[in-house]
Length: 204
Ligand SMILES: C[S@@+](CC[C@H](N)C(=O)[O-])C[C@H]1O[C@@H](n2cnc3c(N)ncnc32)[C@H](O)[C@@H]1O
Image 1 (cartoon, rainbow, N blue to C red):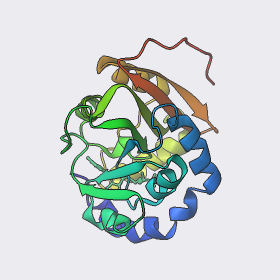
Image 2 (cartoon, protein in one colour):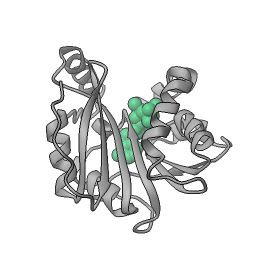
Image 3 (cartoon, protein in one colour):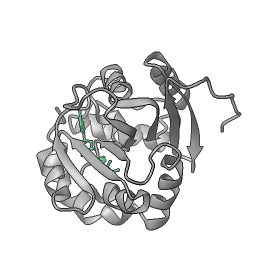
Image 4 (cartoon, protein in one colour):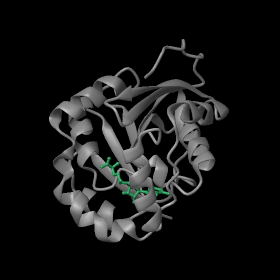
């Protein structure tokens, strides 16, 4: 289960839900659209307050389920149009196999206590050919390592992974994809469940 950090952080996240601009949501919706048709099903793991999920539900015209371990975060997702909040752990999801067209994890993967178990679950609940999209900070950047140290002090696991390491983790569970930098400090991994190995491109 998620540590206590999100008990006190929930009101902060609820207030700064606008950290996800319409532009951010548009860009993510474009990345997810090849996997999630109108009327399809997206899972947002560690989706917190549901602020991003609500924007994606509107953009994709899809149903978005937010799975989160913190009732304090999830509370803010209640009643959002197109969003179904569900309490639970990324490492043992309360969903059937192949239940979703895609899974999104935004700024949450490093909070999961057991990354290989979470990766296995993400691959299990997405249909073959479905999508896996993960936004993460890159610990190659010193500022991210500072954040990681602060999170560890707050009792979080701090499982920050470099892009190549993340790709390997997903490949091990049958998700082929590529992590590309987005700005200096973050990357976005886009993969397909049971997909073909993607051509390697130079990344910064
Ligand atoms: C930094 S917040 C990110 C929230 C949202 N995805 C966003 O981008 O604004 C991380 C979220 O991951 C959730 N979380 C942490 N560990 C989890 C776990 N094992 N299973 C499910 N959710 C978890 C926390 O409760 C928190 O809501």
